[in-house]
Image: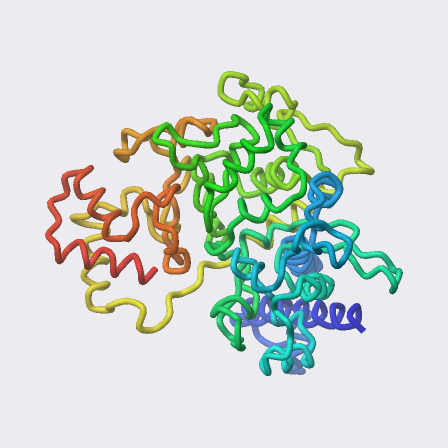
Length: 467
């Protein structure tokens, strides 16, 4: 039945794409002479190449969505096989270790539940408060339903042994959240709802989740430190932050003693954007390959000779991350990259909700944005970043160079602004150093000596909130 639904969904999408294309192209054409037949018009409007393009685009979109939401790239051998993280989730009652992870604990560290994966009966029980949210067995049952976004459990077929044998993670773990469409007793707002792919999960405490693992020896061995050191670094991250460079340079903390982790960015509104990470590592698909193989510990081929720079990336150089070789039959990443790229580029930045900004102030801010405030010289409409090589030195934007030096170009990317309203939690800039948008405008007003009045600053803020 599930395969039938997927095929039907695919058929509807293909037909929709073809009809849209046909209608667009046939607006300036006459119907087939003497027929007026829309089918004839459709056949006339579409070449075989048009059909092939539409079918390929639709298939890529569907495949990319599935990869984004559900593909572990074989990383279960690390998270389950090496770190035994699934045992920490299960707890001793299900053959694991420790107290286990209850739904309340899981939601408290920012994990999200996909309401679309829950049977109606389960939804009703949740609404009635009749599901034990303090029992790790409930968490395991939710994982088995594929309802915990970003986590896949691997189970045996033995009904007498219901526990997990391993677990893996997906892209959606950090780059999806849910809406607030579902509420129930004991469930925090925004914890259960419909998927919002591409949104940064600023509630997710990745460090706390990884630190639950019974052993972190593989990580400690990679970094050349103790497990206690690793747990101290992970404990400093906090909600909404992750440190992708830790496995490259081993720097857990900034010189001021604060965590070296940076905010999880959104994965929407990236079509047309060149370099898209905080420090300009590469394109969307470069970063997908990087994260899948190095951060998620999936099984894939990866090549980036910049990681051979032992002075800048001592961990990566020693581990051979610059050229990760794997046989084509074992590669679970490379074949998924094209469709994943298509899907991510198709995720548009969401429009702000009605009433979330002052329209009159935003109209004034629009003029300031491309005028006196000079924001548009970097945040070029409608990309909201520079078309091309969108990087700047730390001095150019009046900030320190710590995080910039952890990247390959010693620079910071101009971040796109569309949909900024979705990820205000945790602050702004790569590390959340500015608590509010007004703080950001104040910073640039001082940096560039713009001479904005208090009212003009507020107008710019309202305009940015409207994007």
